[in-house]
Amino acid sequence: MPKLIVGSLLVLGFVVAGLTGCSSDREATTEKGAIDQMTDEAARQAVDQARIPLEKARAVRGQEEERLQDSAETAKE
Image: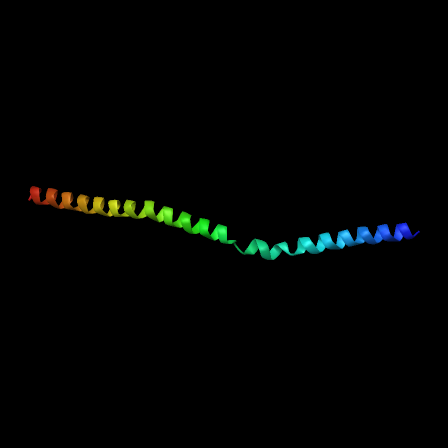
């Protein structure tokens, strides 16, 4: 009989510990860790380093096309 009570208490203790341990994961998933934040920042910087020169090149291309259209219109007159 005492073995049954001790065994039941051990099982109950494991169940309570398991349920308590699983309930604290909600807060851990909402906040990013330091490594994830650093990874996101590095990715953002890499994207900016590729994107900014492309945007500048597109702007220059647009200016060149406008200049060519103005030259063509001037040549027609």
